[in-house]
Length: 82
Image (cartoon, rainbow, N blue to C red; front, side, top):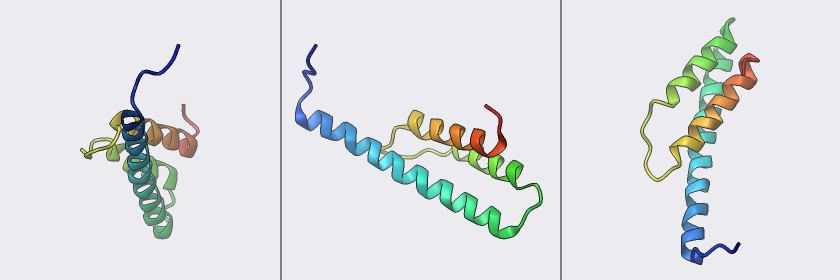
């Protein structure tokens, strides 16, 4: 089965993924950096809570489901909870 979408449609999809990755990575790195630098003894819980809160934000021109799944995966990696 061939993909009948145009090159412009496929490029637009790729642009959305790239924007999504940029927003996700910026948010994740900022969150981790802030919490680690504070030396909070309950760091895994604090990081997980702040990351979970990122999912409530509204962003434009990104795949919200993709962003939120990255957040969920990072939380699972930090807390060891799937």
